[in-house]
Length: 463
Image (cartoon, rainbow, N blue to C red; front, side, top):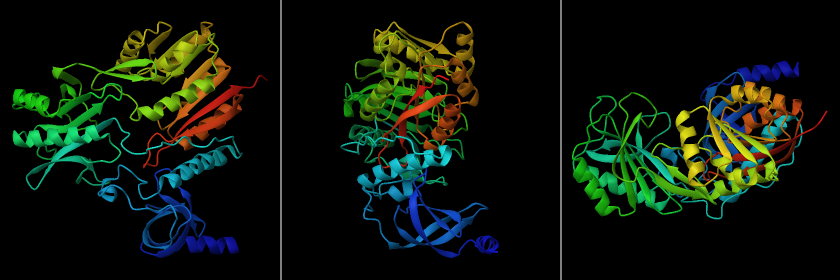
């Protein structure tokens, strides 16, 4: 009877109802999570430890969402956000949380995911944070629009088509902010219009700026809706005069109605076709569309943990699944006998091969294809890896790849993940295939946001 009574009470909750919730933890998207009438409640802006008077905004069979009406008990980690448009932008989720609090909550997020999926404690190390958790992003991709007859550069507010100006973003490198701001002013001065998706008129869709932490040079790309770029020569001249750190100006053409930033055609208008960057002793040559980690300082720490987990002696064959442009594989290559990277995107494979040549690493090869197909094929040919590294998208590893890893039986497995939930879920599968977790190392790659990266070292247990 008591259980039936609780179920009826839960069913009676309606949108608009006032509730009081004690927030237990941080959710995967940065919201506070508590419980009411045995249902999980997700409250954006709430922090662990707070008691919230809230209003129910959505009712689902297994959870509620609610909005803060009043904070009855405040977290000692709550603070005033640095960014004036923090609540409108949505690019960051945790600026109202002190950095010490962010790190504690992210550690707990990882711990909770493993408890939920594995049902046991795993050895989780203290999270690796940043000494200065601001100005760390090396790249911005800002949409261009108009407001009151003026050009605007920013991001769309969550769930809307309202563009929020973030050209002074505190987590972007200052030179990126300066570049975006100056280019916007030049475009206005030359009357080069923003593209409007509804009318399909105008020119400039997106301004993309990336800085090399190695050389302090800036790569600038203007994404246009068509081939035409009015006053192109005057535009390039003004950029060169007013932004001396810009060493490359490119135009990318994206004519489609698509959420993707880039189209298929990129042409260099002036300067170098590629930008030079380094991570440790590894050199990279980046085209405007090439992927590269957004926080180089933390990436070095992340990859050093990968190397530690791989425990290389110089005699190993390492297979880097989901290798992208080869960053992890090239980081490990000086310490391995051979590295083989697998990537489904052919352009990324070409970039990886180019980066290997640039760094003089002739023991690293990169192959276009799906890891779940190539890995079993190599095993059938008698090629067995000593170490496998996976760094999949947020959705986790393809189940066929997990089966292929189990079949390949590497001595060590290194799993890099940006999603603790899918990471823990995949680790449960891998544990069933004979792999044991040695340690979990969280890394704060994106301070002020809800994202947390992890490196896991796993060892195969011979049975």
